Image (cartoon, rainbow, N blue to C red; front, side, top):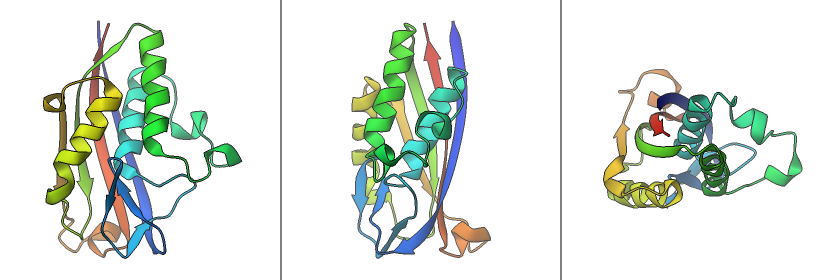
Length: 157
């Protein structure tokens, strides 16, 4: 049996917060605003897995009203959701994700992101695709006000 899930996540960029993407600290003067570490890439992947499991979204499992998730490491959140999949005897096959961010350039960080994600998912890095795009000056991402990510995941029994 195969299942597909789709996830997306957006965070406003603010001064004084680290920019975390794929569990990697990105050199930037602004980072994502959020209750956890605001890692849009990991949040979109986590939501995609939850979608494939028909288990709601991040807010259901890790509500921002719960202080235990304040500044939470999103790699740990992803790990908890992967555990849910494994409890159902489901395995991650592959992930394809895109980060939309006007600046800074993400190319130097992509392989580290893929390695971090692959390790938590229990797959080879060749099964994790991470792409980076700009919004060409359009919308909140293009104006440098936000970071956004989309992901699709395939899981199988």
